[in-house]
Length: 306
Length: 245
Image (tube, rainbow over all chains, first blue to last red; front, side, top):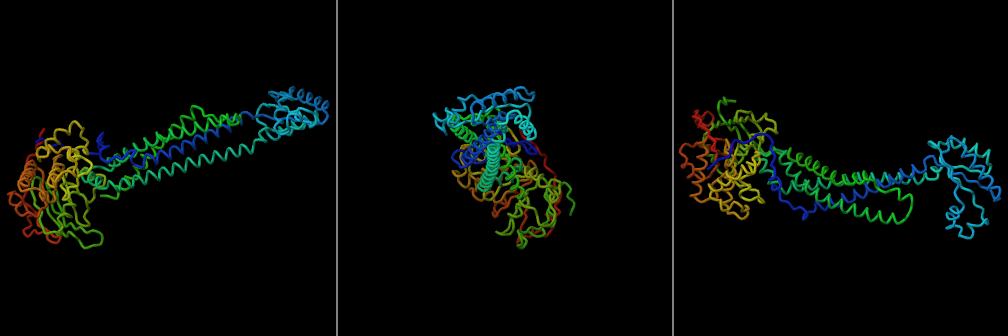
């Protein structure tokens, strides 16, 4: 009979046999499905957060430096004269990048849903002339006040507003939704940690005899922890892949529906390649989190044994 | 503490209690030299299993000192204990086989824990299973094995890594007399190679089958040693330890 060689010291790895040390339930067990649901929800929350961030960034870029001039004058000929004077005044300034008078047809189309086609295209209800102006650099309140004063001296019927001012409540709402998405991602991560912790505790309890035997035969805490890490890591990987597929599928369907709205603001929420990479990293982060949680849980429990 | 010398294990006034109960072991002192063969006897509840737990490092004593392999175990940090345990083979009274692993995988466990590769373990495990007469059951799970077969797997697992100390709790309790003698011969073979063997048993017939063995008798948690031969045993020639290929 050949007997074994001298025992090696330290904490060698089990290698491929580690997967056999614990009975594996895999998809028959609840763990991969719990992780799949968590990852799917996290992917959706992260996707929503990133889309909102893109909406806000695009809208901000679009209206940065933007001001709107209204020429409010009842008499059509006076309104036209003052509008032309305003365009001339603004075009001549060095701090103005572009001046665009909104065509009357476009204005009528904007008002048509509220006033109807016949009224919006007639002079029955006088509509102001709108001039879309883009300034170089940010629009500060002092700059806006100075420009307004100069413009009104030239064009008494002119009113001037920063575009960012109109959209401030929209930006506030978007920011709140972003915070909500971040909060959801954090809560889901904490819930995932709790679920993995409970699963590791349960696995520890149901495999106590196996752990004790490995411990008595000279298995180190690191070796035993690696068995659990491997087992829970595999569950997390399966769950993460399923969760990513579910989350991305849901985002795709929602994206199609939002794209159907045809809104410029919503179109600005399209996800970039970097965003998709960040979303793909969610299940990977979930796997790492599960492995780390399993290790901390198992080594903590093992320290209570001699 | 008395002179440890070349001893492999030394207990000095060791006491053990569980919680706040009375001591299950009191003032235990003995010295084991490499290559010695001991039977640990005593009535049920005398403290045999508790003594073995101290020997295979499942418990720390509540008082006294234990030295093993030349190291004071009381002051050893917890993280160094696995290296000690790998030098001790243990046959548990209730076998403690891992139920979802085959007989082969159960026997291979100590080698895998020690980091041996899958190709390296195949032959020694197959040889060991053949030796205990279970090569035809190598893929069987413990639940499908008889009590005697489970015990043989447990023994094979305990000796596969050729431990320096073998601790066995009633190792022949579930096997027929013929297999009991065969297993005892395996323990003797290991003992001749230098392994110190401690076998806890009720079977008085077994004691006669190993002529050079010493007897440790426990009575109500105390070790009977009227001549001091257990505490200060005469030094023996240490058998040459050979590692077979």
